[in-house]
Image 1 (cartoon, one colour):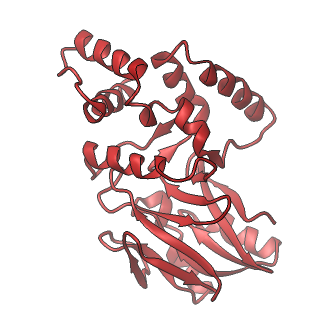
Image 2 (cartoon, helix red, strand yellow):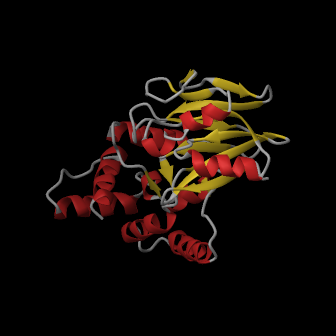
Image 3 (cartoon, rainbow, N blue to C red):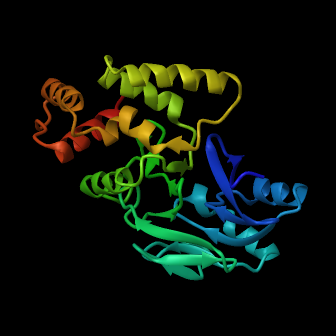
Length: 261
């Protein structure tokens, strides 16, 4: 088993299993217990903890049923309501699971007001970010604010370029269409579309994402660039919206645009 394995759930969710040692795993965002319990049984795996990024149903609804079979801790954002939560976490907390496996907490509000991410440092770091950052996109805003989401994405962008991003939905292919619409001259986006289309045609998932790839192709990480600013300004002008003047207002404009794309 690789360090992190995706279990498909619902229409396009991924529930992640992080291998800690031997046959022990950490469950990330179990919105549905059924595929998780089946995978654990089929592969003779023992869960040692559940970590949760935010309170949306498709990330938490399987927790209670898993806890009926396994007496394990549940880590979740301090300010959100998570079923069965035993450990509340916040920015810069360092949690140790199974005595050896460590995850650092990042507060990444925006999709929800209390959203967190779990970062495994290392030569190639891993970030389990729920619905904050997607392939070539970012999460919608439910209970968080535009400015919060912008700063959360900047926090992720400041991680090492080789960080692997484990998000919770398979949205890359659709998001790249929007990215290409904003930056039709960006050759990195065209190359990524080709790679992504080929992967999906083979039935492969597009995650983990590479942070450097996101910084070159994800419009929500590129609000400081002239191309994205120009596209946002044109959209705002055409639709009677306030004209963006800086990266934050550019982000607000293109997030609104994506909602209606």
